[in-house]
Length: 251
Image 1: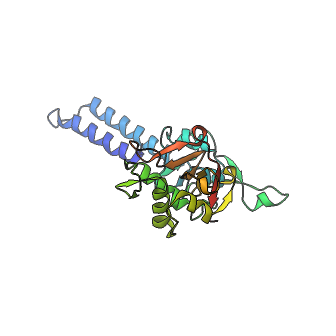
Image 2 (image 1 turned 60 degrees about the horizontal axis):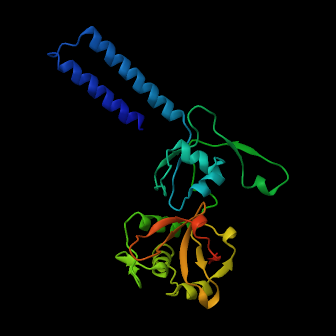
Image 3 (image 1 turned 90 degrees about the vertical axis):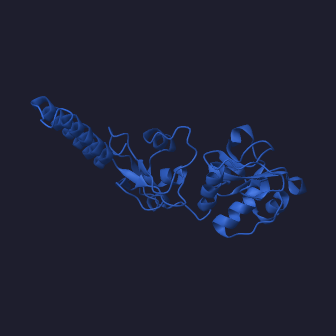
């Protein structure tokens, strides 16, 4: 909750109570107002002390976790993201629960050497160093998943997508890349890697060779955005319930 906003609402409420008594503030009214202002300032000051990360275009929770040293689970808990499938550019993510010191993390450069260097997570961050342009594809796919777009066989627009129509549209709009139209053709045009090697924005495929029958966009943390069946909307799905055969990348 925004401490400044809380502050504004608290003062307004106290002031309204004073006017309701004929414009003459009693000692009790003044005491209540002073206490409310003091509590609001305390909340505001506490919020200013909490280290945060400003979400940038292309960021994912996985990438933010890697650069800040705060686990995906903690980021989710600290910011009340349970059940939420995406983050929004400009959001301020808290890096602590407000009661513990910020976590320390090994810098990316130090990770490649025998010497480990630790640094405290700053209050604000630049875009996650591990984020790549393919994150734009993952973010756009998440936006589509929030728009109640239906599955439509042969569909290639936001009026309705099929699986390869979705992946084609996302890569064209987010990355400026024209993919072949069918899932099998897309698989043949990409570098094949294992599902375990997939990064957000890569494509996942089901089937092999000319028998590839489905594709979806990997968004990280074991999740995909997919157009699956008639009667269902584009949605976020778990790989645990629908394991892919292999992944494809243009990296």
